[in-house]
Amino acid sequence: MRCPRTNIELTKLMVGGIEVFSSANGGVFFDNRQIFNFSDPSLKRALVLAEHLAALPDTDVDLTARINCPKCPSIVMMRRFFTPLHVVEIDECPSCAGIWLDPKELNKIHDNHLTAKEKQLLVNQQANNHGFIHFEIPTNRFSQRGIKKNHNKNTESLVEIALASFLD
Ligand SMILES: [Zn+2]
Image (cartoon, rainbow, N blue to C red; front, side, top):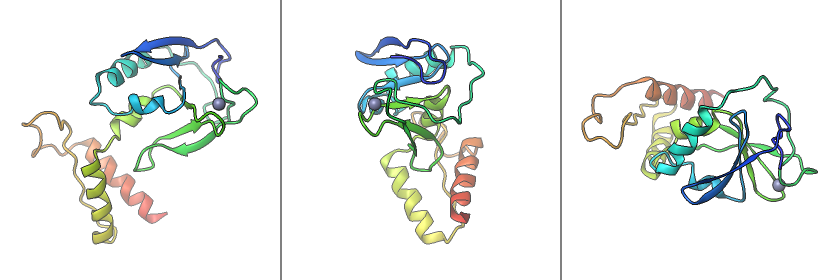
């Protein structure tokens, strides 16, 4: 399979026992639904893969151009949102359900990953506050200490995004 952006042969990697196909420019192809093994940043293999891809040199290619599936070369991939906050757009093959991520998109998915409880909280806040949303996620939900005092960029951008989607 070839990289749909650079046309260079993809490299097969085994990450935590799961096969993925990385591009030399930091893009990655996940076969049918394998992305869900890598979308949650609390999983070690997810972080290992994101770190590996982020270290690859980015190339100057047009990331807005529509691409064909590396596995099904005749099929044009569909753009769709992956995250609940509609922040990260990914390419999905309507034929094989494979997913293509451009460089740094896995990092974006991790940055915007919400737990089920956080998703519910966001839905409730949107329903109750009529656009005035106060939604805070601890920066480091794995540390007991960081939970209350963190008011950081991540939280602010989530609020901005939530507000922006309200204004649409
Ligand atoms: Zn495909």
